[in-house]
Length: 178
Image (cartoon, rainbow, N blue to C red):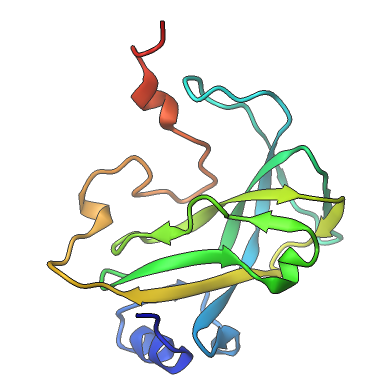
């Protein structure tokens, strides 16, 4: 069950959802319009799941930055979001899709208890200029059922993320490569 805009606002007022910074004008009928953060990492090298990835991190200038096809970008949400009660789904939206941007396609689920600035996987179909704090997608909140379980308390590898996180899959792969 997805929370409506008024339910999101009520949950924020009750302390059940945190969005920082929160702007009431960004609440839509059943989502919150999140923004692109000020930093981005780019990877132009080949990637190996068993090795740490190499990225170049830059601050997106106020005048914007052109994202190029064939480059994997990792961005960051401007907002930090979380809830011990609700799970979250983060996606791009129609506006970014129409610019040829694929945003956060592979990992949209934020577990209950996950309070982070989201690391975003971003791909450009064509060269496109992006700007810090531009609207980049929608965040929906989902009612959870069953016994509560907080992601923060499970000791998962991304649980306390505060910056752009590259894949940590190589930690699981250690000792498994021939």
